[in-house]
Length: 188
Image (tube, rainbow, N blue to C red; front, side, top):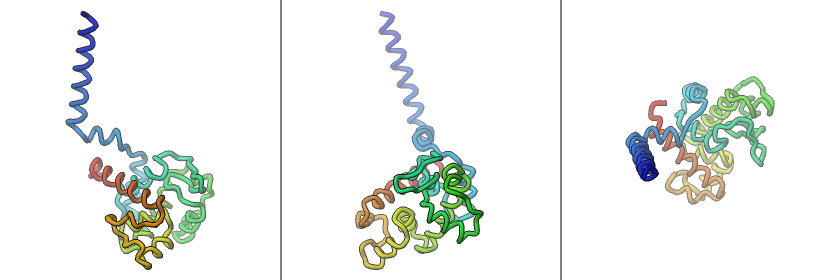
């Protein structure tokens, strides 16, 4: 008899907790889509005229907010930049040079270099967010080629036409996280 009462109690308690969580979907959103380094992201978003939710979405897709990550291809840091790209950005932007080990671990450096690069991609692709995201993954030369030869028109609706499967998936993933972050954190 006591076991049945305990089971009912725990069932009702679990039901109440679920109702509370689902009644406030913002709680669920922040649990499922947490953002780390908000201040660093916010500062760079403001500095480079980007939405913080987009920077957070790229970080989530690239490294899931984990420092010290190096991809199979050699991309480094939170925003997973190739060392050549990071060096190009540091030269163009006049940033103080950081070595690969520093880029791997330094949140501020990784987010600033990645944000500057993303801003430059927005400029290169006339503020087309989808093309900029694709270029972040595949490189601006490839995206320019696809747009020029008509392989892809740069629209979200036609992402399926991107010839690189990895880039197609990447654009969809970043846009998914971006939309989740916009809904969960409308004011960042």
